[in-house]
Length: 123
Image (cartoon, rainbow, N blue to C red):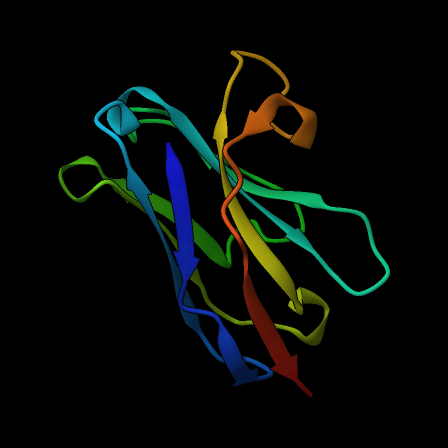
């Protein structure tokens, strides 16, 4: 599986962005997926995850109520709708495949990382 993230950009405090993660490969629909981010000088942190069917979603407390993860298996794409953005959301955002059935918030449990897309929120 190869992943390509896009949709990042510069947005003002309170604004919105929609990130996309396009996957190649026929087995995309069988994978749980996740979004992570890495801010300047920070470790990579979990943002959100979604089950293979889209029926279950999970969020970091810092984004709960503001971000929404979704997927379209027919298009081999996972989305991250980000609303009410804050300057502390500034980071490079990555999508990845959850390779195990456990610890969905741990980056070590993910693989096939995309190249990342930069999100910058100005105050």
